[in-house]
Image (cartoon, rainbow, N blue to C red; front, side, top):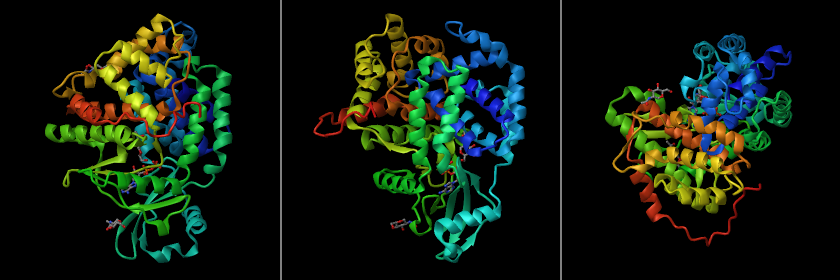
Length: 468
Ligand SMILES: Nc1ncnc2c1ncn2[C@@H]1O[C@H](COP(=O)(O)OP(=O)(O)O)[C@@H](O)[C@H]1O
Ligand SMILES: *[C@@H]1O[C@H](CO)[C@@H](O)[C@H](O)[C@H]1NC(C)=O
Ligand SMILES: *[C@@H]1O[C@H](CO)[C@@H](O)[C@H](O)[C@H]1NC(C)=O
Ligand SMILES: *[C@@H]1O[C@H](CO)[C@@H](O)[C@H](O)[C@H]1NC(C)=O
């Protein structure tokens, strides 16, 4: 993954045309490249780290690049990052979702500096976006509007405002031009990555690019996000402990999304609270993840910790950011649940069968690939393997998959099903959050509760959309 960051930075640095949407797209690509390789997400990170730090990986093909990607270069990356504040912020958004130990210290330090100052639209530009999107009279519908952004969004910025009736809202306002250049920007990235030949073929770049384009196009449409948000709110309406803010339709458009302001701290900040609270938060997070996938079959797939704002005074999760929400077909979810249960039970035959059915394996793989695949699956299944509460403080799942990644990259014959890119990003995000806050969570009990009540009957007419 780091390889991509590095390349990207170098290109960006030497390129006169500074397009912030281009960087943002790289962030997207990174998310996919880093987490999109089926069950091997931990292994990929390890491979990236080894390449970064100069240890040969796998078949030795990449080792030739190692001197190129040394610690020294990490510092160059950091310097380059500092020179491009707004853009680097977006890469940073991606990186810190990953295990921080993968990111070289100079880069972490640089990202911290960069984070202080986000890319902000000048007031005039902001007004013209708002005029164009909401009509000239938009401000007459507000009591006040705070021109100082509350936060940076991935492709825009977020402002606080107060409606005429006194309710507190936030307005997410998209940078102009982002939506129009998705295709060409992603094509540029594809050309760069293909040309440099640095992406191992087991990552199936083309498939990831295809998924990235689709996802990004959807995330640029705030109408779609608003409808996701409403649907999600409806789905969660009788689940205790979660809250989804209302959308203000009158002040929303394709590039502006206005919703109720909600309080809370990002999930990683929970790490300083009591163990009891951390366990509660871990449980609620996992409960939500399991429900989204196996009950709603509709999931918010951006695991950024700021999207789960925990309000300790109410013991409530305020959930935001539904741009990356998506449906999963019933057939896919049926088989995926069977596979998770097989992982939890260390059932080799079950894992292999479900992996074939889901499209992780073709059935033509050599034994060494099957072994690596099954072993990775078991490791990912560890939190679900034993009853009575899994202690995320004592276990690094990410760490254990490390040696399997190279094998899987080498022998993988087929890209993972499209559903998996976003799903595994989300699942690894949830696990990493539990590790970060050090929660103890009865994962197995939670999974089997859903499994026992699950309806596997297929009177639904959906088909697996694997072939797109
Ligand atoms: N309803 C809200 N209440 C409070 N803060 C919000 C709300 N919506 C967004 N924010 C703030 O704005 C940030 C970016 O919003 P988000 O929707 O996550 O943007 P993105 O498009 O990058 O996913 C959030 O991390 C949060 O700090
Ligand atoms: C998460 O999103 C927020 C707001 O968009 C951003 O400030 C933060 O850096 C992101 N964090 C990560 C880890 O990407
Ligand atoms: C959110 O919308 C619902 C339905 O329109 C309404 O009943 C509720 O009062 C609203 N909540 C807030 C805090 O505005
Ligand atoms: C997690 O992994 C890191 C190395 O990546 C190691 O230093 C640390 O001790 C591990 N933690 C646990 C609890 O195993």
